[in-house]
Length: 231
Image 1: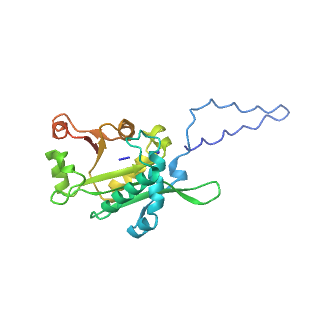
Image 2: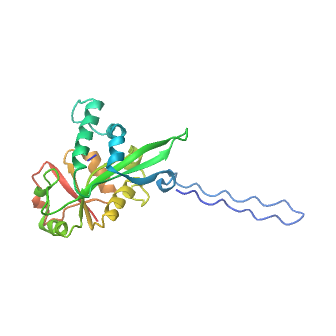
Image 3: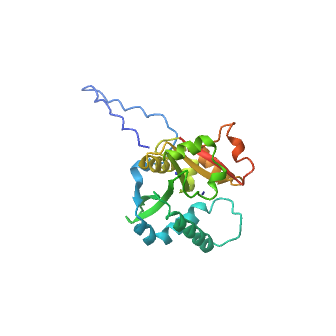
């Protein structure tokens, strides 16, 4: 599995007639923050046809947003993009599949793709996602039986989304994952992350994902991945 609104200006009070007007006090410096993604980036779902039309663009987004992470192979960007597109095409066949994109205008005014996230509902009696059945405790199987469990397969965002304002509700990754769950009235989200992918694990935890409780952790303690849950 592979991110502020300025304060209103101070209003100066007019000076007393015949006297020099009093200059407004300079407000103290605040911690610098980037612009709120709610203002700058528009989130919307794509249909399957739209995904097909933009598949190459999505592959480029994948290689761009994952380029800062530790690479476990020497595969070229083209190979990694092709592998991502094949994986995405397979996931698209899942019932209830949804992919969200974030778009923003660049300096020339053109609308560009800045992020995406996608997933699908987990059905207890249906096909599992990438061996997910080996990671789900009984408590989550019950949630799946009621159609309230949603697997988020990928969240692709810029490095800044991983490292800045992760706890803010308007953080772009938080907006994407929250929208996926709310669109499907899911009570819980689940995702798998490779145990040696510390960068992604850290980002997911900063966006509100949590590991299994102590009593359920034994389900996946020896697997190559970790299961995280989002409430």
